[in-house]
Amino acid sequence: MNELRLYSTLDAAAYLDLSIHGIRHHLYTSRLLKGNMIGGVLVFTQDELDSFKAKEPRKPGRKKAGE
Image 1: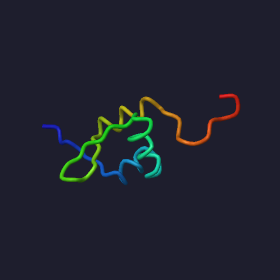
Image 2: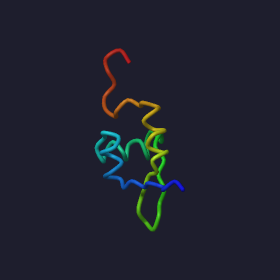
Image 3: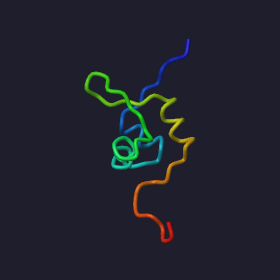
Image 4: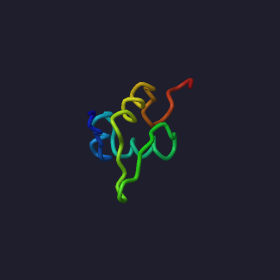
């Protein structure tokens, strides 16, 4: 049986090579990242993080000149 792996916000940030601010940006502003509240704690599944990685979103920040 497959074991469900859950990541905390800090672990998800490390896995995705983002800051905590970057995680929050993708959760609440761009809405490209989905999370689940379990017992008042935000967690992410391996599938959610891998799906997000596959989309390869641009990291938050200023747009490059000409964009």
